[in-house]
Length: 151
Image 1 (cartoon, one colour):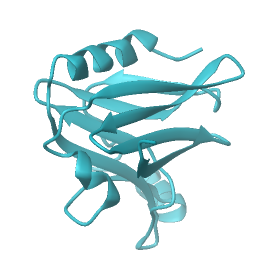
Image 2: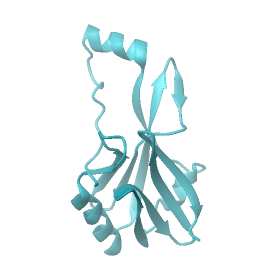
Image 3: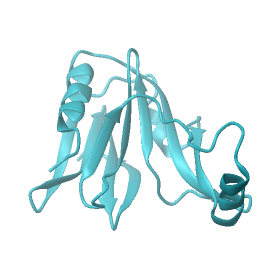
Image 4: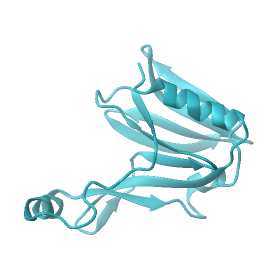
């Protein structure tokens, strides 16, 4: 089961149509000035659309949504929200730049979108471009991203 499976299908169709990746952002958790880059959702912008990949509410299936991630704690915060962020941290979005492993995909077209299935649930996706693959995989309610050779 995949939340918004039609959105993953739309993403694959846009890739098949030759839309290039123009930007990638990763979401990481920040607390006390420290950023945990081990895991976090990924946002991929194509020429005409943006898609957001993360762990679904059940923690087991991939969730894919269209649109740009918006920080629920941006702007003026209430005292309660400010205290929460100070005590518990929050997600932040960082642009992927040259030197980041995921950067190989920027400017490229995605040749194939390969669903990763475990126990009849889509738990990730492999995005193949040239000789490399960006793998988005869920484990224990977390979203992990890695770059591998496509073979």
